[in-house]
Amino acid sequence: MGLRSLGVAVAGLGRIGRVHSEILAYRVEKARLVAVMDVVEELARSTAERFKVKAYTDYDSMLKDPEVDAVFVTTPTYLHHDMIVKALEAGKHVFTEKPITVTADEAVDVVTRADRAGLKLMVGYMRRFDDAYSEAKRRIASGEIGKPVAFLNVARDPGAPPGWAQDPKLSGGIFLDMLSHDFDMARFLIGSEVKRVYVSGGAVLYDEIKAKGDLDLVNVSFEFENGVYGVVHGSRKSVFGYDLRTEVLGTEGTVYVGSAVDPNLAVGVKSGVVLRGVQWFWARFYEAYVREDQAFVDSVLNDAPPPITGLDGLRVVEVAEACWRSIQEGRPVEVVKRL
Image (cartoon, rainbow, N blue to C red):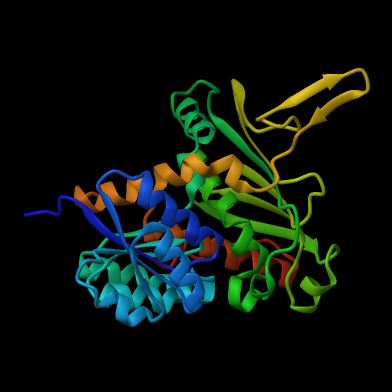
């Protein structure tokens, strides 16, 4: 007999872990937040008190909790592989924040293990659940803009990431830590895999990022297997706030998500257009996180494939690794498919 509700634990209580905890506690049907875990005892204790659940500082102990049916892995990227493996070995379904792992080898390992164990593994690319992106997908699929021929994307964060995320050995760098969302959305909207990439860019905004071997300003040109062409521009700095814009050009029209005008509020006066700006992605995508978490819980309870699979996560890592090879070798690079 299947589960009637899903007991969930959140491991890693940084900003995204606390958001998932809140959503699972209050917004997701048939989900029961039963435990939270963080190596910082005070953070684990205070979060557990807020949601009236069990607190753990040891991940292995939390995995032994019989009330835990599924684990949300919301720790830094370099910890994902081992934590996903341990959860699968303990018989737990896994939702992992993006990116799935730091390397394609690690991603292949966890995807293979999840398939072998018959357990769900979902990757957190929440933009797929955003109203605007979901509608864009529907309109493209309906043929409203004709045949897609180009994908164009601008992604700019307000500032540099936290310390560990500036080290590409730990985070996968700008291509995986930041632009993996954009690569996933390109695959989602176009409905095809990326075939080839060519990257230009550098570290021109932050000395600390340059010192750790990462980049903070890049332009990625790529070609899909179905012949569509794409461009992703990424920057680690946008002084007025979070800046995300996407276009899909078709033979009969164009779909726009976001624009130079804030999608939430803009005021036009004699001196020009005044933008409020979205300071960070919580304001833009909170409801998408709710739908994402609900989709994971539903996939487990209904024994259905998760809408964003481990294989989706692997494909993004493969694109990111091709981007690194392209910038290092100064040439177009084929994306190598591992599974």
